Image 1 (spheres, rainbow, N blue to C red):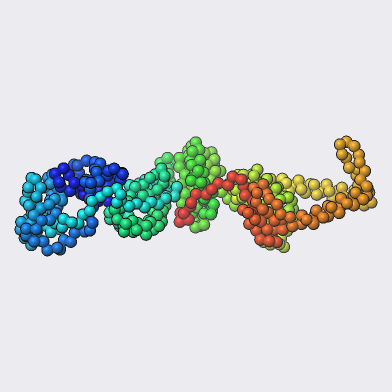
Image 2 (cartoon, rainbow, N blue to C red):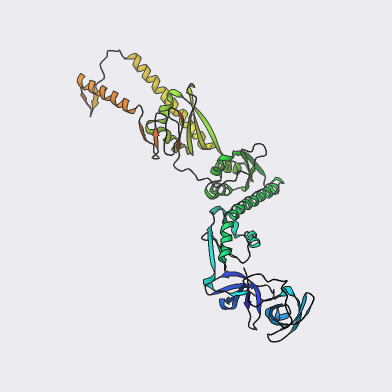
Length: 453
């Protein structure tokens, strides 16, 4: 915001506000040799409106004239001695007096300014998203606003993440409020463009073989890039800190727009593979026999939740759209290592279930139909259960089985799961089949990702 500051000789010099304080203003002068200084509000004023250069001034009239000569550079009271076309001959009223020839554009009425005070300063602030804080620390990040709206001053508090707009005019603050959403949206686009530009430079640098000895390249689904980047870029930071990694860059795939190409530049293949294991998130489908689906899910979702937790996958979704199929797809989301762990657990458990079924079938074929039930062992002593008691237990089991046919419970994460195919909470599904989900306990929060990469 440009203001005018009164000097000891009474001349008002042009200056820019650099910092607004309750007691004073830190200003920078247009004159290069004059250093920045703190000035009191009573010595500061602003132009209330633009002067009209076409105003017909008269000889003998007292005006404010902008005189550029040595220490007299600035606005001061002057008397018009003569008028020659579009020029006026003026004599300054301040000591030492001087006579100068200036244009009418350098003359203005003496009542076009208003004094400043801290109480007259208006302000408006907007919060900055975490991922944009570093962008607004750059000196030119507010250039568009300064070029569009005059008489504003902008402070950026990088600690609190707030942009504070100042002006002496309510009308100017209203303009800032109108433009604020557009400004933030435009700034994000510029930030993303600069990031892409930086990525291109890095790719060019390492593709030319200046640093890296090994390059690992792979594609990730655009929808999974948030997981790969991690909350506030934590995954990429962890991968970059692997010993032997020179740089990691990513950009929109040139083959398929649904994918992002990631390049790892490293000193050796071992370091690149270690970083890739951190970043490469995939979707992986594991087929489960339909007759085994309920056992893989387990009571109240306990078994599938344990598989999610032990494997380290982000989530698993059960796709059951084709009810005629003998197979059901369990689709895991995670790194290649974690989804491989999940498949290992599924296959191991399926093998166990198959063996147990074979043992039951073998037992059922070897036991005569009319054979009495084996005695119940309790505390190393045998107990005979009467036929009445057995009948009551059987009826109670049937009753419990009926209650469980469409039972609902919570998995280990506290999500409701309906076992007739409907899932609630963080699980999603369609009644009678559809899709169900279980999530890991430590799902990383994906950073905001621009699909234009």
